[in-house]
Image (cartoon, rainbow, N blue to C red; front, side, top):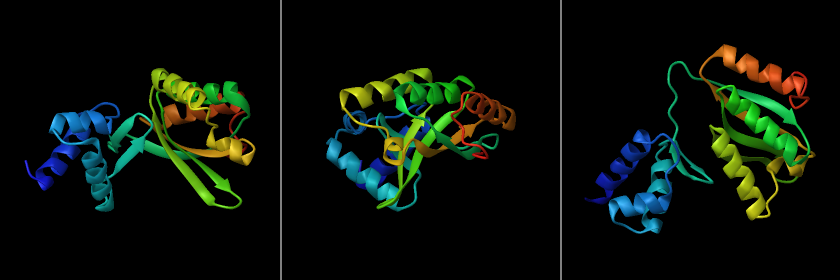
Length: 174
């Protein structure tokens, strides 16, 4: 398999996956080093292939005709409210695509999350603890944006109503 064939096969492998795929798993599948896969993905992304790197691996953005995306503004402090926010979105059937903060020095900073399930939330929270990392929202006093993806407007409205009721959604943050 030559380089172009491998890159096309990477895109196909990501398209077939339900969740993230690590560079190591792709490397093993294609018989190359992890670093070769990282380079292949970087070049694919440079050609506008919508591949996202998450803490759990690579994802290919796949929006269907029934999928909607909205950005919401949130504010919370502490890990408990972070967990509650993420669990609320996934429990109603949404996906937390990313997190965005406006830093006074660096401007907009974003991180790809692609959190789709309670399992994903738990892994994300565990990784924050084991890496002794802080959520991006800690840089901005808890204020942050999320892009969320939902299968319908009804689910989106339920997510907003629940987050608002919990005091997490900023007023007019939809």
